[in-house]
Each structure stands twice: as C-alpha cells, then as structure tokens.
Image (cartoon, rainbow, N blue to C red; front, side, top):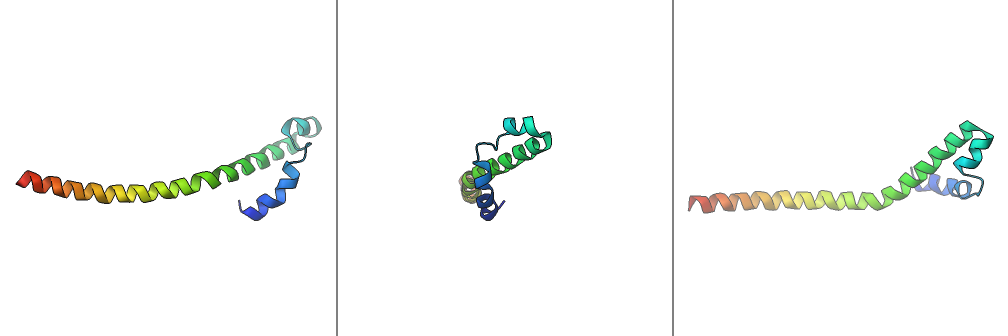
Length: 81
C-alpha cells in the first residue's frame, strides 16, 4: 500500500458506520470487504514502524558478521601462538 491510497481510504474507515459489525447486518460481502480494508490499513501503519527496525537489524547483522569473522581470525592467530 502506498500513502496516497491510505489517505484516500481514511475518510471512509473513520466513518462511524464503517465497522464490520454494522455492515454485517446489512451485507456480508460489504462486511468482509470492510474487514479486509481495515486490516490493510492496520498492516500499513504497523509496517511504518517495523520497516526501519528491519533495516537496522540488517545493518547490525552485517556488522556482527564482519566482527565475528575478525574475532575468529584473531582466535586462530592466538591458538597458533
């Protein structure tokens, strides 16, 4: 999802009648679609928090791998001595 789509659906999902319970009484298909749209909005908002953390984790794992390799070389040199 991109920010433009999220901005377009905000007026709809903030409407008091846009709930699964309310729409279930009117039409099951509309209720299912509403549940999906609400889930996609929630996923988008959570991904805004998680994505930077995943990128930081990838950087930290690369740094750890480099330092771990250096440590293994030094351990091997120490074992030889």
